[in-house]
Image (cartoon, rainbow, N blue to C red; front, side, top):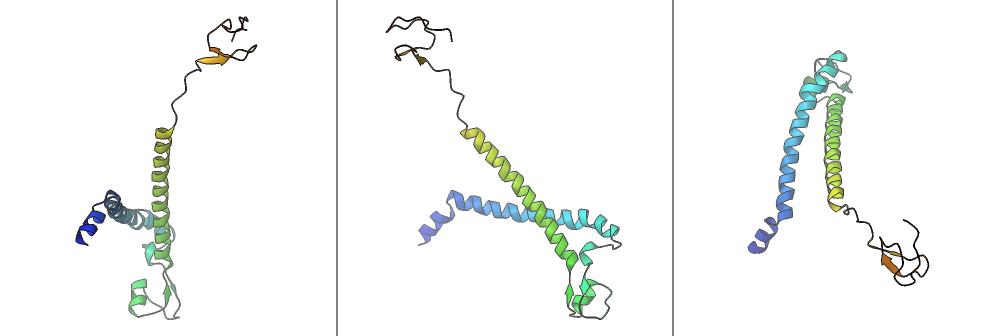
Length: 149
């Protein structure tokens, strides 16, 4: 059973999948940082808040100074700022994956595209319908003069 597991784990597709998960996790962290540290602060500033991710809707009825304070007190809150950050992160990752898949599909199409075919070497005589060389001006079978191509 150990040998069978080793063969499975070292199979190319499993290793490729593991590399994909690791790269995806690293890319997710980069996108999270982009959203939280670069994109959302200006948006939060436009809304009059310093930190967009700290925006929340307090459902408990008691006032709290921040989202952290409300959560520490165990108040019911809807943290819509964090949710919007997550949506923007998802859209960036989805767009990046779309671009990657689109490029892969284009590369596959170019690799699978048939080579341009050469001009046919033969044609049919319009009088006797026998195959003749494409450049022929007279049919060798029926001796008819062929119209120019």
